[in-house]
Length: 205
Ligand code: AMP
Ligand code: MG
Image 1 (tube, protein in one colour):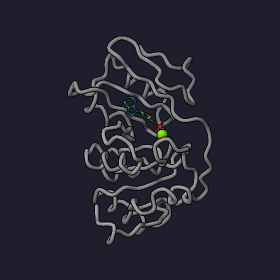
Image 2 (cartoon, rainbow, N blue to C red):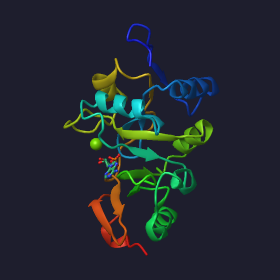
Image 3 (cartoon, rainbow, N blue to C red):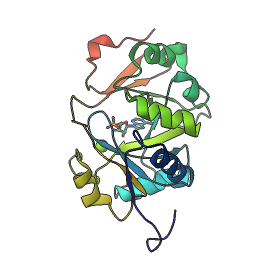
């Protein structure tokens, strides 16, 4: 969105000012890229699914434009049509662990590979998703191979010229391990990354 000459980077706290919030939603609706303080680190986000937005987030990270991103959701219902859900296992895990640090990877409903979802424990993000009536594509706000970013300063250091908006870190303090990632298969499941939810707590029907 926008040429580098005309882009202005909005720095705002959409949690506190209604005007700033409307501006922030408008940036996302225009296909803009944002950075926001997620549960354990800063994330990059854009409206999704959207191939262009996703390619752009990957370009910002300097990695393959087809690398998979996760979709942030405000609940199971919003992602259900995009995935097949063998045995209802995805829904059952979502009901047990969302909102929370469990990323659920499922077969795509079109049969074309897999898709990953998470409902973060961040009420302000649920509000964005509800007000936009859209999932958000998301990934960590660091260049590929670099460490995660915990402050707006370090996000701006990498992405100042490429971002359309950044949510200020306010009282954010990074905590905890990243999400546990589970892939649901036709029969059974695989833990792709053990994060803050221990593998022993995960069992699918
Ligand atoms: P994070 O946002 O750090 O919790 O990471 C989410 C993780 O999910 C990243 O490591 C992605 O590579 C991974 N991921 C996203 N989509 C998929 C997918 N379809 N299959 C497997 N892993 C995925
Ligand atoms: Mg990452």
